[in-house]
Length: 532
Image (cartoon, rainbow, N blue to C red):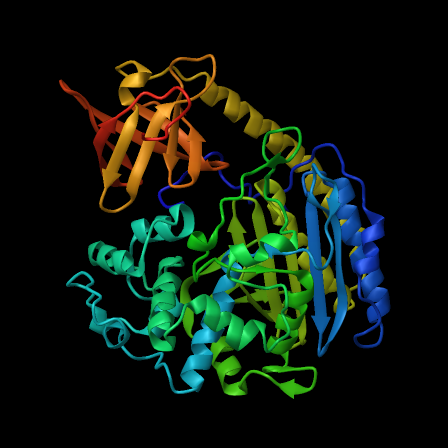
């Protein structure tokens, strides 16, 4: 979330950020879902190699509940398979048809939909926002008639607004009119490129206005239906009966911890609001590799696909993301280098989800990896993806090299898990800095930017434990070092500060994520912070 204080810095010094716990069964029976021998010559051997590594990862690294993979080359699937479980407690196995929340990998779909509208003459990517959102008011230093749709889609629009991001991604408390009003209080940024969800959220509003319907329906009509992506949707309510992979957090605990499903239709936004499967992503990758052709038919206009893939902006400086060197951005895709080959990629991360979607246009290879876990274990997605690339490219000694990488990463991350546990213990020893009894802080706090935050007493034996709610987000509060402040983790692994302001009248307000919320009611409900 914006303004997060990380629970512990991401362990980028470790080759792959993984964590070890009690190993899960390798689930070899799910290999029946692999597709082999349908691509170019040699793909059967490649499929067997990839399938073996996928299962070794799940067996070796028990903090990976479920893992689904699609690998395509030219116009055929090399491998589509899965290992592990979509639901650990119920022992439901993951398959290639298991839907996963893909988080920011959504951006490539939204950008392609915009490119399709542009190709059809219904949207001008270089037109100012004022043309499509005439009621939008931005700060005077960055007016709506100076920002284009293309800038939204390339993260170069020059303004930011955490309240809009929090409402659309986390609380779901918004209407289009409210978002338009909130955008007037955006802050102007000086960076030429700043990756953020905001541009795509606003682009979603533009697509709504241009099409006369929701961007979610535009994706379904213009992309998912034509490409035969039958288990891909931007509506979590429609995916409810499909057996969507359960989200987990793998951190300092001995085993992955099941998370509540926080995603619903209201928090499925244009920057991170799609559910898909390995089978469907194989079709998506094939269409991107073949300039919009699939099954021998031109389903997407080639000029729209070319526009979405074209390098639009150069990053101010190169970014290292694991084994990838990112240097530019297209529409919904980073441009990166991997071993001398150009890779277009858009990954996704969220509580209980990690996605890797990428393709090499020059080699005509694409890879998608889906996980239902967040935390250090989630970076295994990139290890599996590079293994698949190296196998299909025919690099020598792949198995021995990656098995060694897997062993080294597991050992290093075992230590990382101990560090996480030690950090948790250190935080638990902090004394409370609240100046009043805990019940004095309970109540509803409201602000025009974030809406309502609820504070109440957490159920349990401790009488000074607070629980804080923001929309559907719930977190136990723990002590923080500043006076009258507590620490919360709305997203596991990311600590944030809630600071209270006390006067002679009692608790007047609080501050969260840089926003002030005024106390509007006082309650002390032992069952939790329900603001009644």
